[in-house]
Length: 75
Image (cartoon, rainbow, N blue to C red; front, side, top):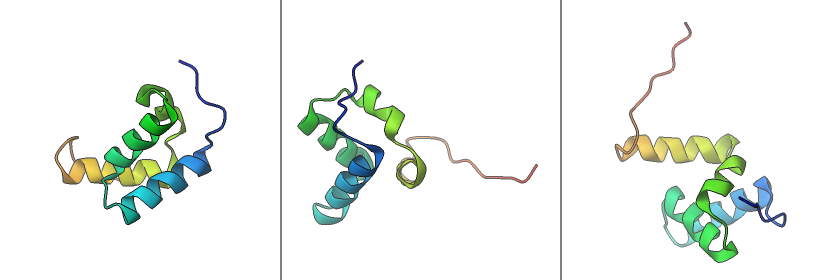
């Protein structure tokens, strides 16, 4: 469970966004591709998938019915 210290949240976000827009990958595919290229276990990289990248990944998963749709409520 060692995370490669050369990848930061910002680097991950940039690499994933580039793959999504340039190669027309899904966010999940792009994250797996980055993990493969850096030989990092996807479970280990999950800790740095935060912020806008996590929101986009969750939205994509909900759209594809991979995870249950949730609605945000105020209460």
